[in-house]
Image 1: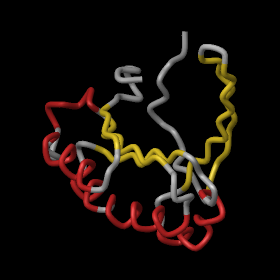
Image 2 (image 1 turned 180 degrees about the vertical axis):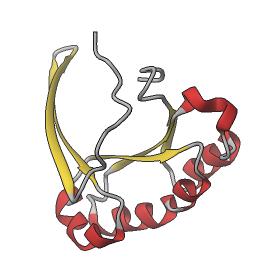
Image 3 (image 1 turned 90 degrees about the horizontal axis):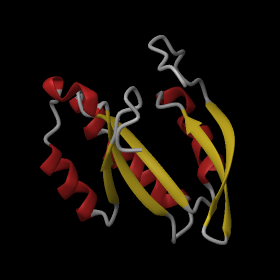
Length: 129
């Protein structure tokens, strides 16, 4: 069983991993890039998501600033990713519902307004995986 790590070092620049899964008769290969949110690394980001087919843009439901920064990230994606790139907005930390500051309906409406999918999850509890 995997254990949730509470003291994780933030991503600097970008980190990379691969995941291969079989769905029905298809093999899907994911190249997963976790890009840092710091402004310092912004100029490097287009090379990580150029030709991306899927982008998961994650914000913290307990931090309104992380939600308001979504627009900036989405604009950057739309300028640099593939035209067919599917964008999923993910509200993380739904295990902290009692500390929520971002209204779920507002987040859903934002996702709809840009043609994105919307999910909520918890990295800690593995809920919404």
